Length: 251
Ligand SMILES: NC(=O)c1ccc[n+]([C@@H]2O[C@H](COP(=O)([O-])OP(=O)(O)OC[C@H]3O[C@@H](n4cnc5c(N)ncnc54)[C@H](OP(=O)(O)O)[C@@H]3O)[C@@H](O)[C@H]2O)c1
Image (cartoon, rainbow, N blue to C red; front, side, top):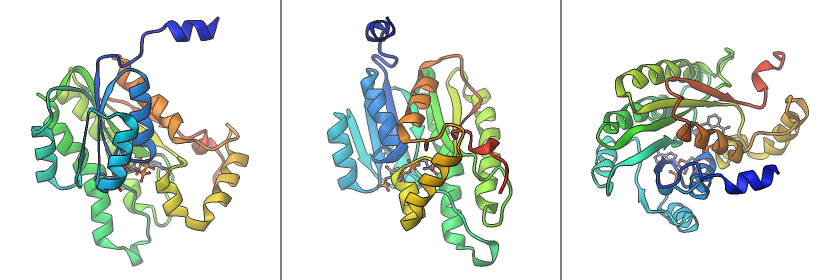
């Protein structure tokens, strides 16, 4: 029976250590939960120390560190102070920048570049010597800005650049693997914050329109993330998870 077979299988990440940079909420927290359930030790980071302490306590985390991951000195310190080698580092810190050129908040736009472009590069610079061979780096990108639209200029740049960066890093860091998850709408605290009182309307609209007839949640992304960590055949690639949002007709 399928359930008996599942109960008998080895945990996918037994004996491994997973670092989640941005692991106190949303996709990162859910991935840390699943990694724990699959036998891994987890180390989580985030900026808000209280939220991080709650997450680390719930997870039974092997470690946690509160700092802004876009601060290169703080990131260096975090990697220097890790107790030993790790198997996977996932980055879920950050938020996209949406806004028309005419109204651009340049500081916020730059921050989104720091979070989505420089943070992966800075983490990658620490990978050799920190991540065990065959382990992985895992980044987060998006699918929403693949189709041009006003207000998506900055988000579109990240959307296009991250897969290219990921492929190049997979060559430079081999045998450490490097992959990126490109998500559509995911029902997380970030989405709630971005949409405000339009959240329920957006959920209902997507649940009706998407081919999967429901919204994508953080557990869906976590399942993909843990698979990308465990499957040692996967590197240099972008994995979409959007419930079919991209294949819907425009409009
Ligand atoms: N949700 C979506 O629909 C969606 C779609 C496509 C891509 N993504 C991307 O996926 C990633 C995760 O999204 P999410 O929805 O799970 O976000 P979330 O719910 O806001 O969670 C983000 C996590 O990262 C931490 N974090 C944020 N900025 C940080 C920083 N500068 N330094 C350290 N920690 C930081 C947050 O804690 P603190 O705030 O306390 O630091 C939190 O633990 C983001 O990069 C997002 O752009 C999300």
